[in-house]
Each structure stands twice: as structure tokens, then as C-alpha cells.
Length: 618
Image (tube, rainbow, N blue to C red; front, side, top):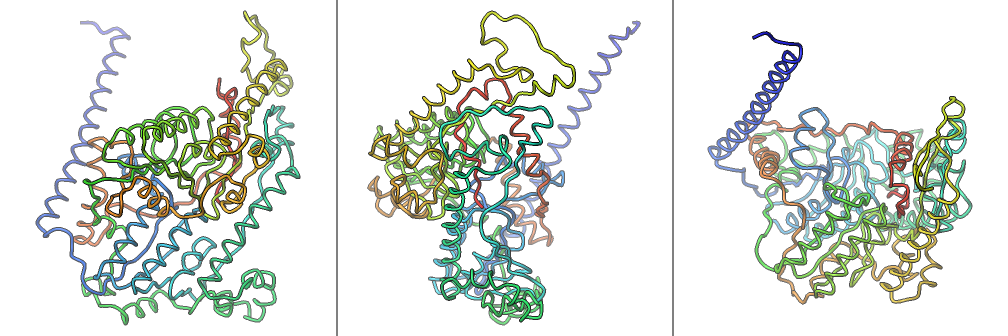
């Protein structure tokens, strides 16, 4: 039969599809075979190696500390296979490991190695620091060592019994606060007009796009916030290191003079300031740990177990009454969102799932979010409201940030608990619409046409914003702000006018928010768990159950492959199955800012009210 060009194309596509299908099957079969081999090796080797006496728990946290990993186990494994090995460590895992190891008679001490620990917020660091103190309260010693310490890493190191630094290392404490990029002049040169409509004097979310510097109101609010957070940080470090009050600020202010006294040796300066207890190289640290613990002949070093390996040995309880924990971390969208972000529908579904589970007697919503969609926020708040009406207590635990939309979803709780340094509040609303009519004029591009109503083609970025439509938007934003303050007033048992006085888009620390009646209690995540259990009259016999989207069967296999089996193979072959190096972030702040501005031009998104604070944990 004669093949026409179309038949040739069809035949080629058929062969291409067959090749792709065969390749897919080959890769999946190869992965399945690897899992089976790993299971067999694990069984033949007698399972996971037992922990012996005087074992040192090595707390080598990798990457950023987060409330929840992003993506699935399958996506993580495939990303690492491509060489994208950015790793995160969950707060819940750190708290679990330190709690269990503190009670484990086989674990004699802990070694804190923080070189690979990445960004995290002050409230989360304070949670880990408290967990270290509880570990020490069991009569166990914590030793910290670093080639250098940044400000975040040092806060945790300060809570060790002994802190050591490499002789060429530094302890870098720079304080809080930052300089933002402002794009007004750049956007003007490009012919882009940013149309901003808002309610809230302090709502500075969009200022980088409409100004060249912060407004006086924004500068005032930022200074009030950052100074309070810095005092929380310095007080914590000075207490942990038994330093005089204000010692850190005095040291920073006299830094040139003090460094000159130390002959320019920054590590010696840290020792002189009593920030560290000694200067040691890595081999000297190993010798110290060998003297204090047992020797492991197999690895020719001190007897130890890594954080990841100890975590893999912890088995969650599946029976008994539970406090259900739902993590709301990331920006808030309206629909379905993957782990590590918040979808109005997906998070509401998790709340409904917990409410309908008879084994879950109370709910803790763990919030770490700067906000996002007002509609998505309301979906979550309403579901929590229904849960309370159904008789299940709801407690909100605020993490690093619970501002704007993050505060909105916290307004239907029996109790709101925040850390002293949580960034919260930012009760305000904006809408932002960038247009590029000036840019198109310069290029000689013109738009024209006919629509049946004045609303037709309203979102065309090549046309200036219709004043009539701007009036409509402002009216909608005013209504959303009234809803926000009204619901907040109802939740806080006060009046909208009193809420408005502390709202206006202004952010507060947890302590400042409590002083203004925006939260109930200063406390930790553990305090929230205990409060929820008490409100449900559960006594002390309960388990903690994280309510999350059920992983697929394939993901379950990958999770198995990525934890227990990896640990077994590591013992057998002295290698880690997956790389754990943390590459530097590829995206720049400018790219992030301008990408967001471009994203809001999507049709319909600009019309939606945005409850976002553009704030991150410093």
C-alpha cells in the first residue's frame, strides 16, 4: 500500500508513542526491581542495625526548616535523580526525634552540626531550641560545632551545653530587617502602569511597584516589628549563653574595635565574646566525641546515628483517639494545592475529613502563611467554623507567619496561640492591575474593537484601566475589608471599629498582637496540641495525627524506598542512596517580584481581592 505523507506522519507518531511507552515501562520496572532488591538485602541482613549504648545522635539538619515538604515522595525522588537535590527538614520530625531520643537510654548525647541548615523563621527556631532544652533536661549533653554560624544557626547552637567553632570560622549576627527592591522608575521606563486599589494605611504589599522607597507608614511599622523580633532573639541568645543583658548589641556596636584587639581573627573574637566555648577543627571534634562516647570500629569513629536514620525508626501510632493536625503552609489559592502550599478547596477538604473522623477529637490548624486569595481563605475559615459548631474544638497554632489571609483562616478557633516572634495581623485588602498602554504606544501598537457591554475586554493589559471599573473594584475591596474586620471582631469578641484601629494592613509580632487582642496566648506548637486535647477532655492518652492528602500507591513505594530501605542499604554499602547536597537558590528576588506582577495579570485574578502581606520570616 502506498504511504501518503499523512500516513508517514501517523506511522512516525505511532512508533514514537510506542518507544515512549516502552521507556516508561522500563524505568518503572527498574525502580520496582531496585526496591525489591533493597527489601531482600534488608531482610537477609537481619533488618535495621540496633542502637547500642552511648550512641551520639547527630543532628545534621539539611536545607530549610519547614512545616511541610513540598510535592510528593515520587516527585522528590525524581528531582534528586535529575540532580536537583534541594532538601528540607520538617519541624515535626525534629520535635519527634528530640522527644524520643531524650527518653531513649541508648542515646547518650547529641551533636548539633548546622552547616547545611538553611533558611527558617525565628518562631520555628525557637520551637527547636525549646526541644533541645527538653532533651538536655533528661540529663543528656548537646555539643554544637560549625565551620561557621549564621544568625539562624547560632540561635540553635547557643542552646547546646558546649559550642565549638572552626579556627577559621565566624559567628555572623546581623540583626533583622531588609532592603526591598522598588521598581517604579523601571516600570515607568518600560511604559507599565501599576494600578493599585487598597484598604489599609499600612498595607505595603504593592509599594515596590508604585514607589521608589517605603512610605512613612510602612517604615514605621517595619521598625516596630523588627526591633521587637531582634530583642526576642538577643534575649534568647543571652539567656542561653549566660551573657549580660545587651551584650550582643554592645559587641556589634564595638565590632571594629573588638576585632582589632583580636588581631583580625574573627574566630578568636567569637571566643573572646563568649559566643563559643572553644575553637576546634573537625578532627579535633571527632577526638573529643571519641573520649566521651564509645568507638564504632566499623566506621572508625565515635558511635553515632544520624537524624534521618533515627527518624526512620519512629513508628506512628494508628489507634486511639487523636488530635488531628492540619498544616496550612504557603500562599493561599482558591482551588486544589499540593503539599507545601494552601488551596482553599484542598485544605477545606482536609478539615472536613478530620471533622467526619470519629477518631479525631480535636483539630490544631498549624498556620505559616503570608496570605493570598481572600476567597480561598474564607473557604478554610468557614470549614473550621462548621467544625466548631459540630462540637470539635479547634486551636490555631501560628508559626513563622500568619498574616493577612493567614490571619483570616485563623478567625474560627476556640483559641489562637502564637510564638512571641510570629508575624501576624496585616488585616487589609488590595487589588493590583498592571497595564502596558504606554509601552504599546511607543511600539506603535493600538487596540480597538466593539463589545456588547462596558465590561468587555476589561482585563486587556494593553488598555488603560477604565475609571468606572476601578470604582467597581474599590467598592468590592471596601466590602471585603468590612467582611475581614467584621469576622475578626466576631472572633475576638470586640467591635469592628476596635479591630480597624489595629488593622489597616499593619503587621505585629505575636506579643504585640496579644497586647492588641488579636490572639489569645503566647505559646508553642506543643502548647496548642495540649490545649486542643484538654478542650476535648482527652486526658494524657492521645496520639497526634497529621491530616494530609493520602499518597498514591506509587508514592507509598517511593516513600518506602526513600527511608527505611535507604537506611538499610547505607549500613550495607556505606553509601546514601540519594544525594543530599543543597544547591543555592537559582531565582533572584527581582525575578520573583516581577514574575508575581506578571502573574496577577491573568484574567480574573486581578479582580479578586488579595489578602497578602508580602512578608516573610526574616
